[in-house]
Length: 218
Image (cartoon, rainbow, N blue to C red; front, side, top):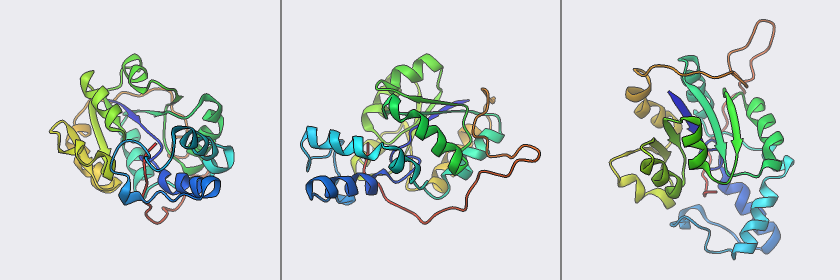
């Protein structure tokens, strides 16, 4: 199976990074529990765009900490032969740093795409499962008959009530809920990049897991 995986608020805690940027630029906090809709209402659109740009600098990208269990779950899927296509709404300029970060944290993946239209990219690549936090992307994938899964966040809690969504509060639980789907499916593998299984003479890229974090969406 070809699996597309979002980055911000899916692989790592993006909310703390965005809130820090908003506080630094505008003196505005973005409490996680108050992000009840898909959008950051405390910031004007131009303020949000500036903060997002700040969070996608090389320094902030490379400082990201994956959610506990994310790297291990994706490594297991990759070992089973499933294709891993990391997809993000980050700009193309952020692609090199993002790729370095994926290798740095030891996330096994075959392809990385940074683009504005994630659903079109999923359809074009033949993605069969999308893991994403955005209700907009999740609905778009469902409309294209792509299976969807997500981590539970305040802004997608209502959407998670939909029967077609596989939803979990953290990565270990998400991995467990996806096992009936993934363990019995025919693997699909591309050219591996950032593989967490070390080649002969090469040290493993998987770092120790970090403490849990919480995140608003992007």
